[in-house]
Amino acid sequence: MLIRRIKTAIPYALLTVITAPIIVSYGWLFMSSFAKRTEGLKPYGFTLSNWRFLWEPLPNMPSIWRITANTLAFALVVTILEVGIAAATGYALSRLHFPGRRGFLSLTLILHAFPSVTLLIAIFYILRLLHLYDTLLGVILVKASLELPLGTWIMKGFFDNVSWDIEMAALIDGCSRFRTWWQVIIPNIRPGIAALSIFAFLSGWSEFLLPYIFLTSFNNWTLSVLIKRLIGDFRFVDYGLLTAVGLFYIIPVLFFFIFTQEYLLNIYTGGVKG
Amino acid sequence: MEVQLENLTKYFGKVLAVDNLNLEIKDGEFVALLGPSGCGKTTTLLMVAGIYKPTKGYVKFNGQAVNHLLPKDRDIGMVFQSYALYPHMTVYENLTFPLKLKKVPAEEMRRKAQRIADMLGIGELMDRKPGQLSGGQQQRVALGRALIKEPKLLLFDEPLSNLDARLRLAMRGEIKRLQMSLGITSIYVTHDQVEAMTMADRIAVLNKGQLQAYAPPEELYDRPRTLFVAGFIGNPPMNLFEMELYQEDDHYKLRHPDLSLAIPDSRKPRRQPSGRRVIVGLRPEDISIGPEGEIESEIYMVEPLGRDDIITCKIGEIKVQTVVDSRLGYRIGDKVRISFNMEKVQLYDPQTELSLLWA
Image (cartoon, rainbow over all chains, first blue to last red; front, side):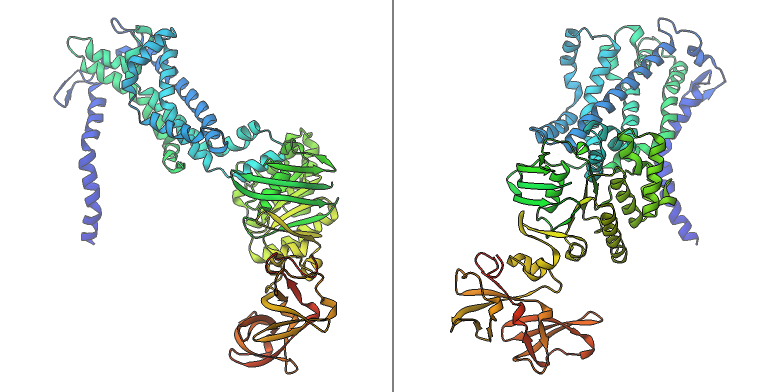
């Protein structure tokens, strides 16, 4: 009895040890955002002043609400673009036979594997050319296009799992091809759409590199850029403020994840077939 | 609605799936497309439905070519092997989906759905999702969905293959009765010859994309025109073995080191085989075991079916199957005398595989 208990306890003990640093970091983040000062990992005193950015603008910074709105708009529009386009291309790749289909499929994979950092300079020129440099729209387009290959591939996997018979039945029952897609196929891959949307939104919300490089004006910043500026632009880093903003940044993600993790797991069970 | 298939041909890439098929179906007729898997029967059905475009040839409804018509404009209903119900809709929504697309008023829609559901005995299931139904119930809903828009042509793609044996029997009768009472022209794809024989007015036997025979069930059974049909129709299958055909005093005879047979005049070949050898066919029920039999043989195998036994007899190198009452209690190794009912013999040319009697 005792031996069995010890046996079951061992994995938990191991997991606790491994996750402890992460838990401690989040705990510290939470506590120090309400602390007057911290020494090492130990916070002292209680204050709300670290959270002052919520009601008064920071020096030389745009309002936090403006930045949050930017981040939200960025993540949402990227999600809509990515899911919309991936649902259409994924369907085409799954169902239609057209010249170059195989090539297109392998290209999507290659594009996905391509490190986007190497494209930064080229993208800069393209954005300049299109007068989209330093605009939210420009970065949204860049982010969405970089995410599309993987999104398309995932959506194709979900479409592959919908039986052809259902589609044929819909065509015979009186649907056009588009209506079949919209009213019969899409409702059946709703879990896939949900999973990809969440995935895209989280990825958009936490995107740092693209906004940091291509958005220079104050008013276009996103939250991740703000955090970078908080570290970089002050002579003395205000750790209290930094932790509060950091916490503010991850709260929506936490809530989002808690409510949607069931769908998120679908992305791995949906599967991809060539 | 009359349906004509003219020189219908379908290639998938380089693979020939349907080869120059000609078929005409009368108004109100129930036609079965019968063949082994991969014979092109489902491809043919999907061309009639408009899902596949023929590579060559025409699908005609009432004499009008419909090759260019989309499935939705063909006025057809289809029942699939997998039922193909829309998983995200309730039974009611599934049933009324074709009507909704036709913009039928809500009141009329409800009335029609209720009538169809009552007819098929699924009235209590209207609010369920397909996932909550048994296979038989799902198939009824699928049938209802195909019938509700009162199509001119019904297509069945192996609709009973996923059901268990008992249910299959019940649904077989039900579909046949429905089709007869509604009088809708129907094409029924199946690999199950019993289904085809019991339900269809005429059966089109397909093999490797080619039409082997197109005839009413009795004719198909009694006068198979090709070797394939002879071997495919009937259970247990027709006994087929090679013998040499020769003529003696104006009579045709068959010989083999182990066996000699005389062909009665009623079964005189209408044409000459390409060689001397022919394939002789005899159905199990035309072979009988008994003391008056003129052929000596030994029982090689006994397969009990309950009421009957399938008995395989060996005449030298030739093996033939027959069905006898199981109470007779034959055993493996028994020496028995058997006789052939030569009035029912079939003869085939081994080269062309065509019947010497009917083709």
